[in-house]
Length: 261
Image 1 (cartoon, rainbow, N blue to C red):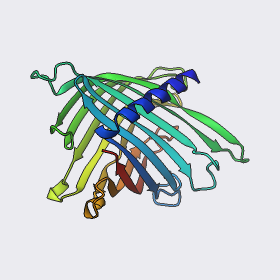
Image 2: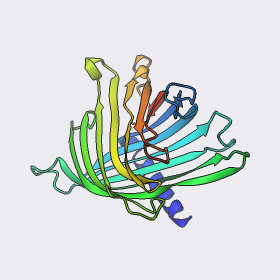
Image 3: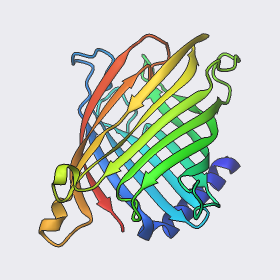
């Protein structure tokens, strides 16, 4: 409990101090459904995301917190049923040298959730602590509106569920962002791709997760440049499935985004 309070306070402090430097709130409606072609798609849900990114003379900080809310009756009522957070710090004390695009990255991931069992009782689960460290190679414009980022990280997942260490404890991440995409003013294309190894039920497998987003700054037409509308499509393989080999999942989403800067 103390660790959760300290982490929450740290994240809140970063949020308050970083509002003018790249903080946004996203609200998505997820159209995934168990009745569609991909049999393991999740039920319709709403997700809110608070996301921040800002640079400083010693590197950059990125963090987000997701909350999922129920629409389907199989999810618990009256509370969010899942929360998940990531915070990553890139250390770069050599920003005026030829190696300025290369940073050392440290990161933490974790979360928790609740669900209803077959008789309607509420039960919980954890998204295990994960600590990551590695290299980050980032190309960007001076205002970070256009960014191309590659990461190669060692990933340690605490207590992966069977007491056996991961045999492939690496994660590859690609992050991108492009303003005025295809020369269309106000259109932004962004997203990420993660690939990592993880053990499920004693078997080694790999996980793929990518979430491309397309945003249009609709507020530019009525003097409210903070307001964006757009879409996200979540593609994954073996993600949040519990066992290897359960395959591909695709969840289209529609959303709005409010940028505080």
